[in-house]
Amino acid sequence: MSERETVLDARGLERRFREGNLDVSVLRGVDLQIHRGDQLAIVGASGSGKSTLLQLLGGLDLPTAGQVSILGQDWARMSDARRGFLRNLHIGFVYQFHHLLPEFTALENVAIPLMIRGETSRKARLEAAEWLHRVDLADRGDHKPSELSGGERQRVAIARAMVTEPAVILADEPTGNLDRERAQRVFSLLQAMNRANGSALALVTHDLELAQRMERTVRLVDGVLSAAD
Image 1 (cartoon, one colour):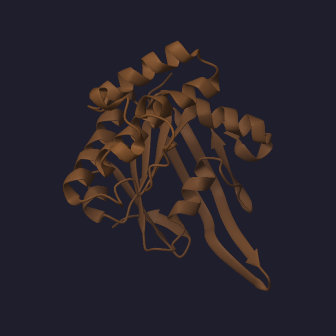
Image 2 (cartoon, rainbow, N blue to C red):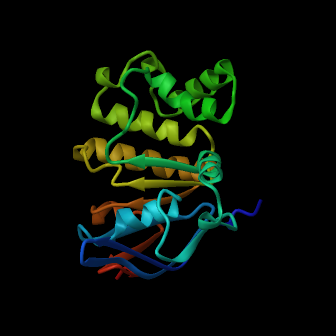
């Protein structure tokens, strides 16, 4: 596959939410293409629609108008089961909150996406162990999330996102709950995974210093997307 293959292609995206007599327009005519290997930061004020855009890109929500395609396939033209299958196959999600399952160990949390895909428990655990090693947590695999620090939990979440070798990582404020030192480490790890695996990285952040370290930055203002200054 070409390194510059288009992974996600958004055209004319609009997202409106209706509540009673209110009709709120969150995204208005957004066009965005993300290619393999890209490093893209999406910035904007709170409430500007950044997280909504990421949900649409990842097929977790569908637009009011316009379309999003994942490797040429329109999210809106699929069944829920098909969307779930393609998310597991091609997308890794990292959130501000790690969303690790508290009753499972770090190793088990990382292995879950592979087991959902149908891998054997043994193979899933071996691959999960390899990814924990890559994020410098090889000795923490038997620990549950409550036994890990905030930075460690976020690194487990990154390993879980990367274990399926996705085409794109969608990260929503992944350093938002971390102190500066841990935030820098998590951010550097995401960039390293992007370079090593060729996965595109699309990062929503309020941290302009981190955004400046990405190759491309776009800004959302009142639901309209433009290149950052």
